Amino acid sequence: MTSVRPSDRKFQVVIATAEPRGAYHLEPMYAAMRSSATSFTHLVPYPEPVQGSPWENTTSELSVLETADRIVITGGGYTAWTELVAHRATTLGVEFVITELAYGAVPDLRDHPLPSAMSAMSPAGAELFARYHGVASEDVVITGIPLLDSLPLWEPRERRVLLLSTADAVRQDPTGELRGLADRLTEEGWDVRVRLHPREGTDSWTGHSIDRSPTPAIAAARAAVVIGYPGSAHAIVAALGVPVVALAPSVAMQEALPPAQRLLIPNWISRASDFDPERLESCAPDHIAHVCGPIGGAAQRVVDFWAR
Image 1 (cartoon, helix red, strand yellow):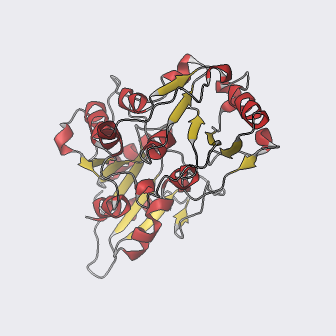
Image 2: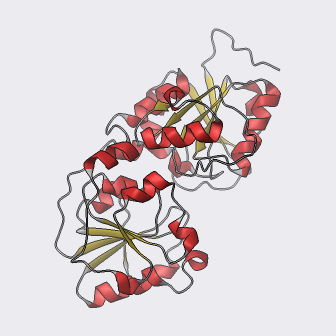
C-alpha cells in the first residue's frame, strides 16, 4: 500500500522515538516543527503520559502510519519499538527516514530495515550510522545537536559541580559511587547540583539540589566541573569547554558510548575516591567538532530533513 496525499492536505509526518514515550528527544525541535508547513504526529505505543513535555499532536493509534506521507524514526540504532515501526512502514510502502538524536548505533550483523535517508548529529555519528546501515558516510546528512542551538557562555563559579545522573543507577552503580561522591564533595564545601535523567525520579537524590535547567548546557554553564555516568549529555556540556568526568563503575558503563564519544571525555574514573579536582583536562576543540557537529541551527536542519 502506498499513501496518496491530496493536494489540499498538509504533508503528514509521523515520528517514533527510540524511547517510545520519549517526548524529551523532540522538545528542542518544537519551535521549528510549529513553524513548518508540515504536520507532525508523535506516535507512542500506548496511551500513557509521555516523558517530557508532550507534542500537541501525540497519539497511540497505529493507524496513523497508514495515512502518513513519511515516517521518522529517531534515536541511535533501532530499539524494539522503532524497528517494529520500520518494519510496519516497509509493509505499508510508506517512506521512512532515520534521525540520530541519541547515541547507540552500535554496528552488528543483523539485517535492519533500510531507511530512504538518514541524518546524524555529527561526523562521528555519520560514521556510525554508515556502518550500522551499510551505506557511505557521505550519504548521511549532518545536522548538529539541537540541544546546542542556544549554547551559553561558560562562566564557572568556583567549586560548583554538576552531577549527571541516570535512570538506571541502581543496576549500573549498585555501590552508589556517584551519590557517595556528591556527599563527599558537599562535605568538602562544594556547591553540588544534580541533573536527573528525564526518566529518573528524585528519591535517590534527597538532600541534594536538583538542577531543572531546560538543557544540560545551561545546567553546566556555571559549573567548574561536570561529573556523571557516561552518556550523550557529556558531549553537550563538553562543547562549553567545561572539564567533564565520566564515572563508570562497571565495564558495561565504560563501553556505553561509541569510541569517538568516549574519546570526547578526557577524564575517566571508576570510583568516587578517584576524583581529583587538581588533575582535570578539557576536551580538544577539534574533537568537539567531530562529535558535536555544527553548533547552531540544528533543530531547523533536523525539521527540514524530516519535511523535505
